[in-house]
Length: 380
Length: 158
Image (cartoon, rainbow over all chains, first blue to last red; front, side):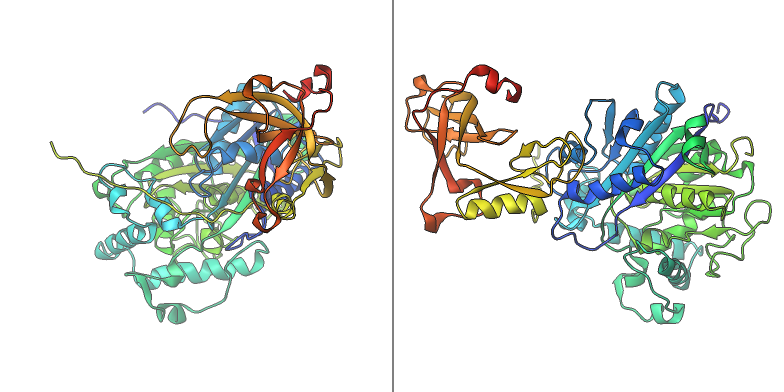
């Protein structure tokens, strides 16, 4: 394999905004949900839509059942005069990747990235089945909870995790979510209490499942001096990479994630100490797989110790999902971008110096993106 | 060879949004409700809640008359599955007086060969007890007989 590509042009996350995550947006359409988020992401750093040279969004029309809803969503930005714009039928984290690539080319200095996901208009379990192989898998309508349960069962059978581990992950994330004003589900419950819940699909109980969420998020990326002008302590993207595994879950070892491991290596996760990880593990059973593949296992994630007792990287404390992660709110096509935004927020504040953000897509962590954010451009 | 059908059917609850709901409720009362952009002043009907030029909420409701002009039109001669109207019929873009965007409407009470760009039209509503939050509340638009609008007055809406 060729050496991992390193970011050549310094590009940073300089602003982030997200909607209040809710189970159901009864009144507003996607444009009305997005408008305040886009307005906030610009207002945070005192810029306007005219200050970004590129716009990229992530969403899927299957959620609302409206063709080209991603085109009408642009009305939330007001793209006049016209400028380069793109869309990915993926989580906004991948839209951010596209924007980052364009910024590397040097023609524009700033980009808006946004995503939105309204899961409430349809039956999410049915909608998600349609992302599967259309010939052999989708016709069986396997719902995402059942697929995640197969993965959780494989973990238990392999001796890699227990149901108590899943409950521990859920308890820690939802407790952390108590300090996240945008969280949909937040509470302080003991592992013992959670283990008393009924199974939804064994071995997954209610607490191990992500909520169904309507939400939206936006990020501004900026390069070099533009980033320094707009943000006192930019979250520089020192490495970013995404990898995918086969579309056949039955052909994978669901207890490991080679795609995350490869993306983490290419993004340079292990090149320095990591003090914060925002990982996109919609099911509590998946967090351990993600952390292990990132090389951060045992550093705060699996212990259920509030995320401050581990020894990631060079021994510094590692905080995992201080936002509560996708267990606190899981807007489709948005929760991955939100992880990058949440990680960047803690770099700006000085709470973290070097953070890893992860986004996932597809059944059982099929596709993954890893992004390393650093307070210092040369520090990595 | 074995053929296997795997039907796919999804059901959705449509949320028109705050602005479009006002438009739809207006139709149920037999009137057109648009919204104005606070930045550029343009009036959209129906509004999706934002000005697509400025990206800001269109908060101000604007009552619009049910008269306007045909900006452009098409005579439909081709039958297709699910067709509800007898051919030939005229599908036109109608620009209501005071609006800055046109929407599609049927033109009737005039031979297809006589329809013109710039022709003045007025909405013909369904009976009051048939009104609902749907564009079906407008049966069609009919010519008013007034003088045609000059091309220059609507060329930016084509």
